[in-house]
Each structure stands twice: as structure tokens, then as C-alpha cells.
Length: 250
Length: 217
Image (cartoon, rainbow over all chains, first blue to last red; front, side):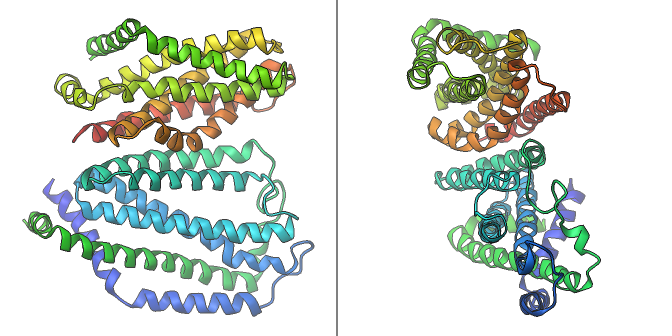
């Protein structure tokens, strides 16, 4: 038990330190600057129908990857909260998930904008869109559930339980749904996606920095939210925070 | 544990039997829902019949299963807490709400056959699927009603939390029951059936793992 808690402190300590450092923020800015400018200017393959809209790949796909990363991190912190019962872990879980929700909205908007030009309409009941709409509803429900409760401990516990339940069900559901409706989305039903562009060096060179940059951006936003809320939490619960800190060092 | 489980299920059934008005209330809810659908759609064709049936099941599940946790007084949980393990309590509630839902789905099937017609080729298969469906719906909603009860909210919250989660389950169920409606060859029917059962097991396991945390104060 003692070994277990010190190990989790070690990882948490590492995360706490890294949150304050600048190197990954600089990397984020560099990657995003390159991906944004390069995404607009560098050559892309000429494909029918897609044409220049293929550039949306640089902005749309990173949103989903960032969202999934943030949801996963939030899920991990929800589990951690149930194990430790420290409100700090709840702040991490909530802020990471809330940032993930923001990215799901961005991903939906960029996807619908692209679909309007390529599929002819913004919403066409595509399974990817349906799965996304469902996951957005699930996480909006998380916000409703969470903000309906005033008591901090109770809010933390119940929202952690719902977050774990929803996330663990969401993954198989998103995997099942596309098998029940035909898809137009690239990567389904013979439509070209990543794999066919992988050989194209000019796209790879922009795509991977875009992934890294947007993921770091997501965690950067989340870390700022976490840190402001930690300050507020420390101010409001001076006494309890000291106890938790002392327990951690003991 | 098995003994406690039986006692808890029996207690819920007994309460249901003694307060007959809630039981009849749910029955009346089913009847008036089906009647309202009948007034609007008459006797629809098979595919619409199927969709309407599963929608009815969804609304009935929200109303019938909400009772499992929300009807208990919050203070009574503290009493149960001293008596039984949380897992036993959750499983007892799941058994109780699934059996309530089984009865209600049979009633709504009967009303559908009277009012909206019986466009089924394989009636037995459809009954079987609707029974499996009521177990899966009530498993999800039982856990969500536990969450709603702990958050001291009403059944509206349960619907908000539950609808997006059960939409894919409903889609699986309605696709499965298409086989009972028309004898068209459906590739992957068995895979879908196995996926549904696996999903039910996942819900039950998640419930068992997570419920002890909800239970503590």
C-alpha cells in the first residue's frame, strides 16, 4: 500500500512539475505554427471531389485525437479519484474532460464544414456523425449531472462513477454503430483515408506536427484550467489541503 | 449472499404488491402510451411497427425502472448499508427491475397486437428478443437511477443520462427483431446478438465494480 501510493505520487509529482515548465509549450507553438502555415501553403495530392478540402485533414483529425486523449486522461483521473479520494484528482478529471468536450465541438464544426463542401450537406446521418453526436450528448449529460450537485465530495464521487461508466460503454458503442449504417466517411466502405496518403511525404510532414501540436495545445488549455482551479481549491480549503499534503508526505 | 439477494428481491416484489397503485400506474402508462401511438399511426407497416415498439419500450423503461432507486427514501439506504453488501443490493434491484420490465414488455406487446396489428412472421423470436431487450434496458437504467438517486435528482436526469447510452442498444435490438418481421436473410445476425449479450454483461460488470463507490457517503 505504501509502495503503491509513493509510486502514484512519483508520476503525479512528475506531471505537477511538467505542467509548469515551458519546453512543451514552445514545442506546441512551433508545431502549430508549422502545421497551420504549412497546411495552407504546402502542396497536397490532387484528388477528385476532395480537391483542396483535403487540407481539412490537418485541422479536423487532430481535434478528434486530442479529444480522445483528453477523455482518456479524464477517465484515468476518475479512476484515480475513486482510489484515492483526493479532490485534486477530481479537479484533474473534470478539467481534462471539459477541455475534451470543447475539442469535440471544434471537431464537429470542422467536420460539418468539410462535409458541406464534399458531401453536399453538413449533416447526412453518417455513422461517424451519429457516433460523435451520441458521445457529445453523453458528455453534455456529464456536465448537467455534475453541475446539478453542490456538495464537493459527493459531486466528485458521482461524476467520477458516471464518467467511468460512460467512457467504458462509449468505446464499444462507437465501434458497433458504424457496422449498422453505411458510411461515406474517409476510411469506411472503400473511401480513401490516411493509408492512401501515407506515402505522400508532403502530407505526412504536416500531419504529424499537427497531431503533436494540437494534443499539446489540448493539454496546455487543460493544465491552465486545472491550475486556476487548484489555486481556488487551496484558498477555499486551506485546512483540508494541508491535511492531504501532510498525509501524502507521511 | 444468495439468501440476502432473495430476501431483497422478495421485499421489493412485496412492496410492489402492497402498493398496487404504483404497479397499476406503470401499467396504465404503458396502455395510454400505446393508445396514443395507435390514435396517431393506426396500423403502421412492419418497419414502423418495430420502431414504434422499441420507442415505447424505451419510455416504459425510463418510467418503470426509475422506481427501483428513486422510490426509496434516501435515509433508508443507510439502513440497507448496515445489512447487505452493495453488490447484492444492486443485483437485487436489477433482478427486480428486469422482472418488472419483462411483465411490462409483455403487456405492451399484447396491446400492440390488439391495437396496432401483428405484422410478425416469427412471433416467438420477437417475444424472445423483446424479453432480452427489456433486461438490457433495465440493467442500464437501474444503474443510472442509482446515480440519479444519489445525486438527489428526479427521473428526468436519468433520461438525460440514459438516452444517448441506450440509443445504440435500441438500434441493435430493432435490427435484431427485423429478422422476426420478415424472413429476409440477414448477414451477421448472430454477431449482433452476441454483441448485445456482451454489452449487457459489460453493463452489469461495470455496475458491480462502480456501485460500491456510489453507495459510500
